[in-house]
Image 1 (cartoon, rainbow, N blue to C red):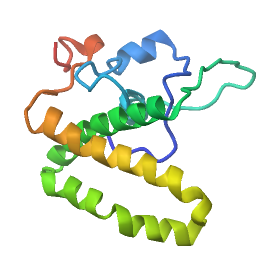
Image 2 (image 1 turned 30 degrees about the vertical axis):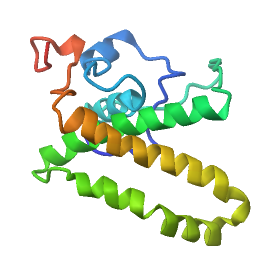
Image 3 (image 1 turned 45 degrees about the vertical axis):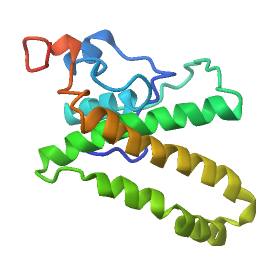
Length: 167
């Protein structure tokens, strides 16, 4: 499956018919503990020809993460999982990720911050820098911890065991 651009689900708030969830394999259990499992699931739903859409009138409740430290920890963890998904996508295309890509992204943060300040104004900059630093550092750590070591391994889709998914 490809990269999603705003067409996915957020699994903190989702209702899915069980037979569809099982048909695409469910959540990939090989991913790091937090983040992007919903993007991966969304990509598999779309690749299988299903539609992702809001349901009119459906009410779901969500408890937002509070506190800067907790939010940054989640963003960092999500970045680790992104590195695993990116790696798998690149491998499928025959262009493996290189660690230097993550180092370059971190090194580019100051220049990107200047561009962001010019485009959005200085007021948004502190929040943007914190978020970007957390996610970029998370991606690099995810590459080193999960991809480079092989810890993530192959996707493990529990409902496809015996039908194309890893056990």
